[in-house]
Amino acid sequence: MGHVLYLSKFNLNNVTDIGTMFWSCISLKSIDLSSFRTNNVKLMNHLFYNCQSLKSIDLSLFTTDNVTDMSAMFYDCISLKSLDLSSFHTNNVTTMAFMFKGCKSLSSVDLSSFNTNEVNNMSNMFS
Image (cartoon, rainbow, N blue to C red; front, side, top):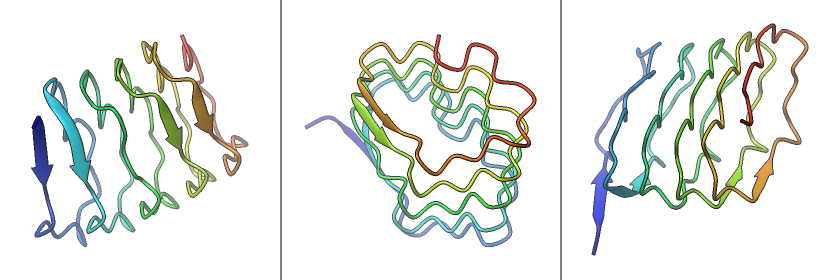
């Protein structure tokens, strides 16, 4: 059946840093983040770093208005095939370096809502 992580009881109301939260969860295939309220989160760097088995993820309920760092957020998510980030508001993000590095199966990414006016580092974003 694969490895699944259920986080429906997590309360993130006061959390400002979720960077590296799922770092190297290499067997994780699915994550239900529908209960995550990320209104106060500022750091999402390396959030899904090296989640090699993750095939899909629904981030449509993520609030990213206060996020400043999205660096390496999906780094080496080698099984991820598509990603819809059209709900992301990136007005305050300053770094997106290595954001999708190593996502070799990723064939579709919706970044239509991305505002990169404040971004000063996009190095290796899609490498």
